[in-house]
Amino acid sequence: MDSQELVKTNELYNRHWWFLGKYKIVHKLIERYVRTPYVPRVLDIGCGPAYFSRFYQYTGIDPNTNIDSHNIIRARIEDVKLTGKYDVILALDVLEHLEDDRIILRYLNENLKDNGIAIITAPAHPWLFSEHDRVCGHYRRYTRKQLKELFRDFDCKLYYFNSLLFPVELVFRLLTGGKNNLKLLPGWLNALLLFVFSVEYYLLPVLPAGMSLLAIVRRKRR
Image (tube, rainbow, N blue to C red; front, side):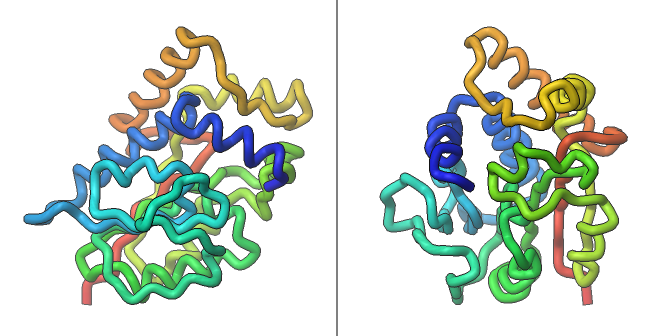
């Protein structure tokens, strides 16, 4: 991601409807799938603003985060080696930034508890790859088949999301040639889009298409 894009993204993490909606959906999924007698341990790969640190026993990894905390490891994902085990591993819009996305498998194999889950999001539809992706430092967008193959050694449920606004975003990208549209909107519109996006949590099993894919990954039962 270029420096200007990074600064802009850091400013939007805690305000923009896209980021907040994604965080809300993932938070609900963690609360739904993870049942522990203690506060769950969460590893957030590519943690950005460390949104989930306020809810869980938390470790974040991100070379570009502006968060100063002993719970955050400022390093490239490829260079970190952890020994701990986690109830949840998050990689939210991270895979597309990795030249070799198989690095995520090392974390799942070495750091995910046997009864834990990983929640992973990634941009969908390679045919939508555009200038926006290049500026953001993306190597690729994904098909369902590609993600399924990446996690073939795990139990993996795949869903589309960012679906209700998919037609609007698709038209916008076609009209602008795929230029970046990531900017803070007027308060009322930002709140409306956040509400629409957040509703998708309840619709995940039936959404037929969307701008993004969401994977819930578990170890296969032996």
